[in-house]
Amino acid sequence: MATYGSAASWEALGDSTRRAIIECLADRPRAVGELAAELPISRPAVSQHLKVLKDAGLVTDRAAGSRRVYRLSPEGLGALRDQLETYWTRALSGYAGAVEQPSEEEQ
Amino acid sequence: MATYGSAASWEALGDSTRRAIIECLADRPRAVGELAAELPISRPAVSQHLKVLKDAGLVTDRAAGSRRVYRLSPEGLGALRDQLETYWTRALSGYAGAVEQPSEEEQ
DNA sequence: ACGAACGGTAAGTTACGACTTACGGCCGGT
DNA sequence: ACCGGCCGTAAGTCGTAACTTACCGTTCGT
Image (cartoon, rainbow over all chains, first blue to last red; front, side, top):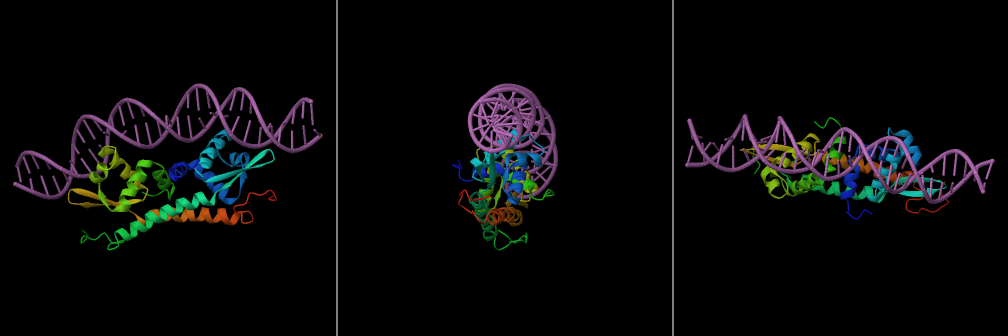
């Protein structure tokens, strides 16, 4: 799980339903049924999405009685943020002369 | 363009080829043909990906003679990073008691 | 111990998106 | 003015992933 590094995480966040799940879990940890109640899809569909998110290392699960509570994984989210930070920094530093100004003296 | 806020950006980064393009552009700005030369796909396919990235606000393009040079957009990347930062912060603060320790005194 | 609630998995359908080839427009050189 | 390189768009094919229903194991309550 999460063997790919962050590739699986990016692909996981590429789906809008999974982003909605992430937003729900950002509010507070929830069980599968709770998530399904707030989403326009069936409960098995939610389970499948949670499996993808879990394999990507973005959420963790925990048995609580007969229910299973999912929560966000700060490590997985932090890794993506750091990668974006790198791109963002390189985008700024790489073209430091222009930065925001697409003037024609460049190159 | 970029009307969706960040939804289009997330979906744009969900594709591995587009992430490869982002990495190439993080190195330095490039023309379409240059990108196609470093990728295992045809040039029209690169054009289509660049259109998606541009509509998502992740890259900007600029005419340079008969060529068209693409570069990363710090604004677009920064917006995604900030959103991840929010999730990450909420993930940590929301479950501050446990943080990393899935012990059973919770709840 | 039985029944109900909760959740994961299997199988199958369907829609979408990633790629190809073909074509047309624009700019630059000679 | 013509020709060649650069690029975007159109049309069409194909794989895949997102959903459904159906089924089964597990856990709690009575």
